[in-house]
Image 1 (tube, rainbow, N blue to C red):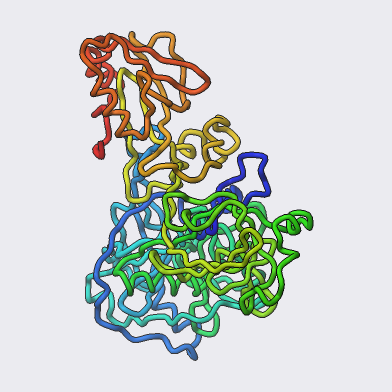
Image 2: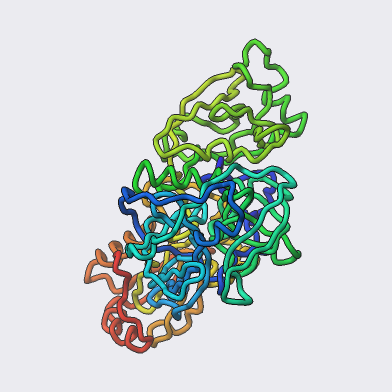
Length: 536
């Protein structure tokens, strides 16, 4: 889709699946850098941002003048276990960094405060730890805003100003509290690349800068400085090479803050909602009619190039407008090249998701397309697409339903990671991985229900299935987890058996009366507090 991409789990490597402005393309060697690195999660909600102003650090001052605006973050967090959805994990402690901006707000990384139970901040040179709360959190862009209610915390604290997106070979300084000591630490380097890159915390593609300064565990959320201004936020590093770190540039930070200014909270990045294929092959270009376009038929600034629509989210308004084999030639005023890139600055080019970064849900987006040999201009309303398989369950506890010892869960990437590890795309069953490439749901509320495991009991003897898709119950197709519960509860009392049809033609049959009679015993035996999650 025009946004983020999924990991390539099929042979169709030419189809670029683009999600909400970011990448579903897995980057297993790039890690976020809190201490310790924890599973993705979320916490926090919106609040008002109408607060007293504070002074700011003069950009002409030395780097040392900025130190008082940089804080050390102590976080205690507990995230859920999606493979055992009735359980939470052991509480973990982590260290991160943050910095003060205008409006008495502290910026840090989302992964530093995900699923936080308690968050404490310590100022530079101080021994006092102040309680902080999460104002809002943006997981796609890996940013969060913290607030401290204590007035004493703000005494003598000045806000840092945001600078511009750095240029190649700019000298920068990373400031934060990395592992190896307790005090503030600085490292210097240069900007080696500016590109649209996958953010590991969310697998979304957004603008990112690569630097050769060391970014270590604990640096996450700390500012990257140039000439007394913040030009980025340290957030991840490359494991298999030395001195390759990544920072979130101010272009993304400002967009995140704009969400808060407009809506009082982060509302999320949006997308057009299509999957696409680059059109670099000459025969494909000719077949689609790109070589036959007259220059007089093209809007100003649009060239005869673009990407081919493979699929569209039919549950969105854009899905009604965009069709298979449409060629998207321009998006939001950006001319799209055959390789799916747009102009960035000077002669630099980046992934076309950059063209949509500044848009909000409901915003009109002008899309120039080629269809049946004619150039047309469509207006598409931006919104979040409807995925068949959910990427992450931020701010939502995992859901499950148990009947007769059969444990059912919705298929999500969070579940795959907890069940099969970070390299789930190599270890999970191909039948489940293939569903990631289906991308869009065909009806509202549709989700894939998976038989996660079978709890041992007398009524499940001989059944060894796990991690298989549930298709139907007593001949009725299962639409989602709630629908599964409704189907089971609506089975007549005179029906002796319940048939669960799973993939590859297999079937599980339970004696209905025995399953109901042993319900409490099975849950007690496995120390499970309830047969279903609270949302059901």
